Structure formats: C-alpha cells, structure tokens
Image (tube, rainbow, N blue to C red; front, side, top):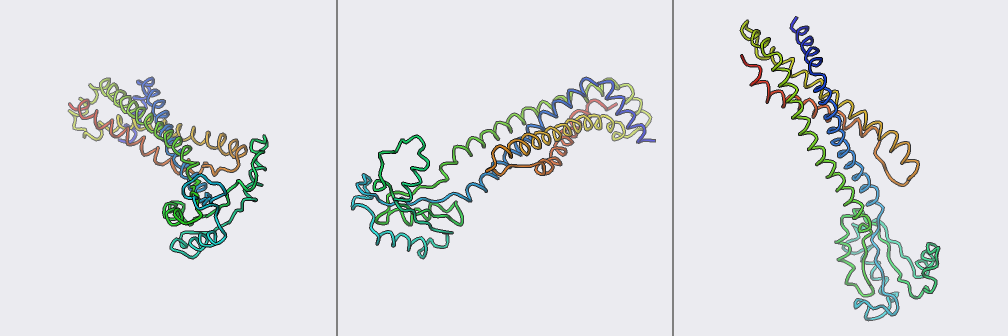
Amino acid sequence: MRLRYIFSEVGNGLRRNSTMALSVVLVTFVSLAFVGAAILLQFQVQNLKNDWLGKVEVSIFLCPENARNTACAAGAVTPAQEDAIREVLENGSVSHLVQSVHYESREEAYAKLRERDTENRFSLLTAEQMSASFRVKLEDPEQFAVVADAVQGLPGVDYVYDQRETFKGLFSLLNAATLVAAVLALVMLLAAVLLITTTIRLSALSRRRETTIMRMVGASRGLIQMPFMLEGAVAATAGAVLAIGGLWFTVNYLVEDWLKGSVTFVDYIGTDDVWLVAPWLLLIAVGLAAGASLATLGRYTRA
C-alpha cells in the first residue's frame, strides 16, 4: 500500500512539474556527459603514455668532426671512446636500467635522413657531417635522468636527447582539455543541483496542504519526503542514462569505427571503458538528487 502510494505520488509530481523535470534530465545529461568525457579523456591520455613512452628511446649523440659543442673540443669520437660508452650502458652502474643498446653509425644516420628527405632540403650534407649515436631503450622511461647523468660527461659524448620531449606538448594539450572538460562538468553539475532543488521545492509547495494533512494524521517524515526524493532521483537517473548512451555512441562510432580505422598506431579507449565509467555516473546522479532533496525537504515538508 505504501509503495503504491509513493509511486503514485512520484508519477503525479513528475506530471505536474514536467517542464522542470525535463530541464533536470537535460542539465544532468549534459553535466554527466562532461564528467564522463573528462574521465574517458584521462583514460586515453594514460593509454597514450603507456604505449608511446614504452617505445621511446634515449639518443646519445657522439661527437662528429668539426663539432662546435665544447663537450667535443677534443674532436670526433674515437672507437675506444665508443667502446667505453657502450661498457657503461651494458655493464656499468646503469646497466640494470637499460633494456637494449643499438649503435647507429654516421652512414646509417645519413641514409635514414636521405630516405625521409623527400624535398632534398639536406642534399648538401654528407655522411661525415652526421653524428653517430647510441639508441638506448630503457626498462623504465622515467629513469632517463639517471642514464643521462651517467653518460653525459663521458669523452666522445656530444649531447643526450630524450624522445619523451617530443610528446610533452601533446600530453600537456590533452591534460588541458581534460581540465577544461572537468571545469565545465563542475559548472553543469552545480546547475543540475540548483534545478533539482528548484523542482523539488516547487513540487513540495504545490502539495503543501497534502503533506500537512499527512503529518497531522501521523505519517512519518520519511513517508512524506520519499516521493519528492524519488522525483529528483528519477529525473537525475534519466539524465545519467542519456549521458552514458551518448558516451557509448560517441566512443563506438567515432572512436572505434572511425578513428581506429583512420589512425591505426594509437591505442584508443573503447566501449568497455564507457561501461567502466557508467556506474560512477549513475552514483553521481543519485548522489546529486539525494543531496539536493535533503537540503530542500526539511524546510518544505514540515507541518
């Protein structure tokens, strides 16, 4: 009997305030879509970091002939110096941090440059002007500084380059986009809370006489407040479901169907990540409705 009464009152309340309830659904949908997008974007950033940073190498460029760098004042690197550098990497104090070491001669470096130089911008260069290098793959790319410090001052070393620098701009851009999405999500969540509060307040005011009579005949505070709380929860949950559906649609058709087929070297997020985020979006929606209800009902449902 009580459940039938509660559900009946929820339906009546949503019909009476259908416009406000629809506004709650839409604002909750937009706000939680931003929340979900921010979380998924951070998932994507982490995927890129795990994938790309695991592939980057530390490049140890060796002194070429006629080098202007003061580190190469003694002239071009000698075979003995190359052997000493390799010894430090493979058997020295940083050997446990090194996964593999590949030596690239000046001729190999020149051949790669000419292969990529489709516009002949470097046609005047010769192999003797190129720098030989060691391409070092690390067990943990975050340990670059330790390896760099171990070889930077060795005779024959021109400079050490960390390929992670190439991706810093991209990761900074993606993190900034995540921050913007999170800020917009917070603003929209605040708007959703205010709308839910307004909807519940209007519903409670429109039934003030009914709730007063129920209080007089001994109805509990929980029984009186429950329909109003469920109204907000239903509207907010509907918005969350729409947000989850929108995120799933975007990831499934835009990311998995289009981006994965267009740019194949990137490890993208998938619909499984959307389902991972979905329960949290539902919890946020219910939490918003519960918080707004408790903040409003104490005043507008007392006798």
